[in-house]
Length: 630
Image (tube, rainbow, N blue to C red; front, side):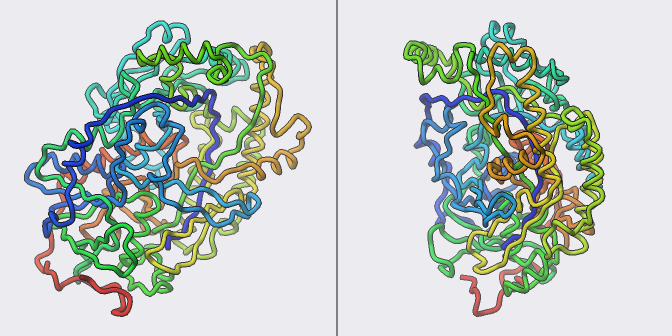
């Protein structure tokens, strides 16, 4: 099972809303695009492992070449529930669309277990997310390039951010004018698959909140998606003009339904990648979902390339089961080593959270509570929604503040110095190799420079790690976020709480009468605030990434800038796993850009198969008593 470590982001959400409504699907047409296992061909040019967000993008781009056959193998199913595309789905995630995994107890937050968010549905995380469609700051992506990933900085990714999107002018100009919503169409596409816009509603209190940010030294950006997603800014939603979810399934997979060279197989797990004697990836074994481990499997060959898009949790899991991963871990599990890559499953990063609560004693109306407390307003909202307008058009919200550390804490250098003074391995898993530690140090140096920057928000802090012990190789991996193990994590949360209180005390806020509920006005010392944060902290905001990182192999990297897995051929990774350092943003828009760039890289041409290809030429990675190929 994978080994994981984790990072930190703190961002402040200004507004949020739960809503509900109706939807549509042509279910019969949708299911005709799938195949059953009996219709599988013996071989395809490309096999895409995982029909999640990135897998559907890459499969779409690869199958644009009608001479190339593409198979997508997805563990989940298509969710054609009508409500799945409505704004209400931004805050309601059906358990059927998620893997049932919980982290191990987290000592840094009182031994609590954390929900592990990993999608098990066609479309992946784009099917079940909050539809906040922001990007990281330019510096986030430039930091990737500093790890020898040429072409993966802001300038290299912007064309793919644009290629994936289509900005639609908001349908209510009165809302735009009243609340001064701003955007820059030049940083979006005009005909990309994913539709982006602002819903036709804003809660009146947001105007006061933006003004209060300005009063405490946080300016409002004109367009966060222009590489300036720090300080306060508006964030669009990935919805079409009618307010329906625009995502990988209905914008990348559905339009490709007429392509005879693209096939989707659902309800099957990819067990392993099979390698030739020259370590070329040539096939995958698949097993029906719900069948017992050791049950019958099938082998499907790939003539050109296998692309892993199984997500942050299962891409490294498949690699490890296939003999690609940390030598010691593989040997412990009885798996023969094909490529010793200590970074497979390590470097895991996420955005832990803690909730600060204030009550507005003189809140402006209407507000979010009006949807529950005011029957007249409820009725009006329902009538507005018949026109696809009003409060029920909102998803999670459309305004954010992502705060640079120097803005939040004038003594920020003290935190940076404390981090620099630490012995690198102190808070890392004891299983980390020299390569893992070298990668940690490289990332730490880059990130601490960003901590002193006014052009980036508080984001990933590489000061913690996690580990797991393999038992059953086909069981779900044991996930250890190691949340809040490093004291620097707590320092950052303390800085957030103090600055949040400054925001609540801004002159404009007085008209709302904010009263602190949690942590509470009596909680004032750094130690007391830190203890409060520890008690209420969660390990994940469903932004987990970075477990097959794009970095030099000597730094614990798993894939090259061309996204090829080190030590083998014919195998690549194209999903959220390849991110080396988590950006300070919701990850959906970034994953589209990665997948679009990946699809371009893959379609641009790779070498063909080896001359020694043959069914009996696979490199065995299991003892005979462990597994038989059927």
